[in-house]
Length: 283
Image (cartoon, rainbow, N blue to C red; front, side, top):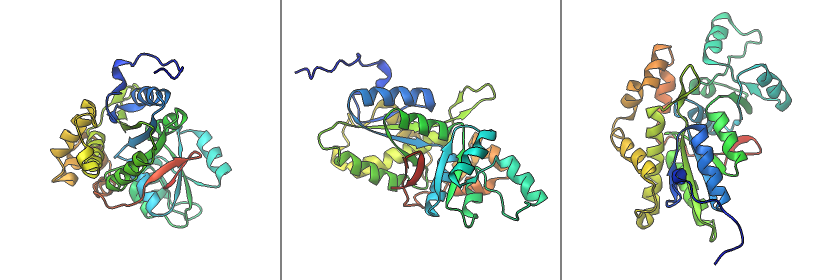
């Protein structure tokens, strides 16, 4: 029976025959999310940027720091932070220069570095510019999804929260859009980052474990199943896998090995940062 609502024919990329779907980066993730929302599904978008946006958000949530994701790394971020009365995270390179030269106010800088957030004191709100994680989070919220920031540190807690949302959908078809954020090449094109694929698979593994008998062939799309398979190849030695990845090697070579180690803290956090009114706060 028709409900009188006209819907477009399902696009091939919608993965709409499955509850748990996966697509890379902002363009694909927004396409899946908008289709699911238009289909009247209860949509949860799971954003994963292991090195390092969502790891930073999870560390901030552990410290009860509200994170305001911001799409641009420019002067507008300064004004945005001032309006919110929040600390502004600076680029890693800028934070190193500031640390070497000494801060005029004596306050250590915070950057897109989990270690810098963990070591911060007296911070209740943080503006975190990120052209990948922040941009994707805002796009998917604007598309109508509930957005949660997931890393290896909180994948189990996030899976529990998502299952609870699925149960509470009350007759609405749930859709979980898993989004490995990836990185950017210098020309701005998407660079799929294997650590985000592993993070996506780690979350999917925890979700499947909690759904038990409901984890049938229609639960996971082939794309989500592929992420799960990738995770199973590294789950026994996550720290070493992250250090060997291209992104991990880059951070270690640039002097940020602690950030890679923090990202590998599997299930260390029980905080589930959810985007509400433009900010990530624990659910």
